[in-house]
Length: 292
Ligand code: HMN
Image (cartoon, rainbow, N blue to C red):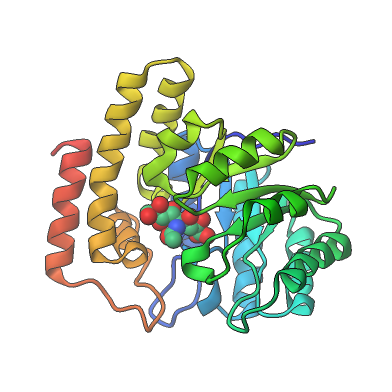
């Protein structure tokens, strides 16, 4: 079974003034982060504003990322949407684009039963034949998976891993220990070091688009047993994350990319453009992170 290891930016979706995908800026973000040593990309996720994109834009995005990456690293596409049938359609389209694996946010809004959610994942895995990575993000999806439920899902041959966007490290530790042949991804960048300490080997995160180098180095330091340096780097990254969260994580990430010379536009409305005072805070956070 494929081993996933390393840093995976949950990539933003650059857009122009008409809210259409800007593939040139997408390529710039991908090249910058590949140069910093990432292991792959998570595309069309929350950071990618997937639920604000039209279906054909999501497919365009996945196709563009696969073409730009061109086999140099992994591409994982979140294909989750509101119905099983629509998710399978998106999964098949992603497979045709050449993704390494698919991932799916649990179906939300209608408060489905656990039985319905489990079946949703089994149906996607079986119909698409693609390796599936579960997407555990209770804060945004409103779906709270219990540990036993995740273990049951991970026992399915087609389900190869889970992305843990949760602060529940006790659950993450249990999954790493119990599901040894499956990939458990950390999903909160601000706890990468604690997640590594419970045995996690890969991390998907939105802030890696702007500072992948910090987290690539952090993991290297951890692997080399240099905890002092790993803690230092986690602290550096967290300084920036604090500012991003204060401003609004997704618009703020696009703001930092603009300051770094890659104009990815604003986030799709109803997200609002950043204000001059937001840029001032981001400029300061960048100086604190990388120096002036
Ligand atoms: C995605 O689907 O885009 C991501 O994987 C989301 C990712 O897990 C981020 N989670 C949220 O934004 C809720 C984190 O990278 C997060 O932005 C970061 O840890 C700061 O809290």
